[in-house]
Image 1 (cartoon, helix red, strand yellow):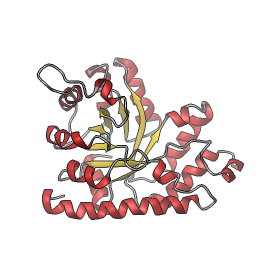
Image 2 (cartoon, rainbow, N blue to C red):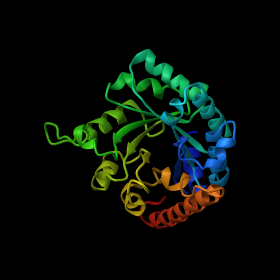
Image 3 (cartoon, one colour):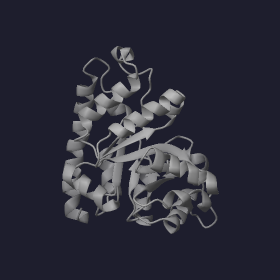
Image 4 (cartoon, rainbow, N blue to C red):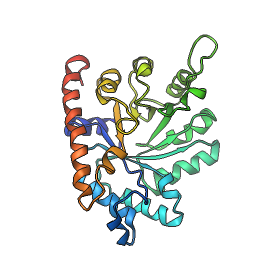
Length: 276
């Protein structure tokens, strides 16, 4: 999916909601364990219930890799079930050099047909650029994350007063463009959001941390939106585990609907200021 198609989908659905299918076998409703592939049964129900409300699904591959071959098969079934026109993210946080990075890119772009993959930038340019060589595909570079440990490195000041994460963002913009490179910016990093948007005004941000982690949707939207919206706000547990009974998918839809309704309002308000 290219940028124009993504922006069109956001405007059409009045949503910039990304739903995380970070499905834990031990947290899904018990009745699903009777299925041959309970995780896929869960994912299928969530997708059916929410596909008109979100613009993206993010699959954290760790929840599938931990199940071995069976998990990879479930991942493939899930990605194939997601309807066309919805942006897909492999949250794999890969980051290796040269030919190895190319093989990772082929895994998620060619074999599984994801639109994008999250990439760790610690090893530098040659660990990122292989992901940028696939037409219509995106690398989502870790910028400033929501976790407590982000302060260990990302928020360290460098000579001249620049944060390390700012150096990563500046470097990233020289490796890719706003048409094939996004940045992960945690929703709990509200003090830095306006600074980040000023530094990279045109790029999309994948924003985890709203919901269970305490990020504020309205505040993040106010500080982070650009003329194309420029945000994919991810909610995982707050939607997929909204209920745990036989009507779990209905509960998930209700939770997703609340986010979509709020996003439609925020998009309308932002139209008046930045021309979304």
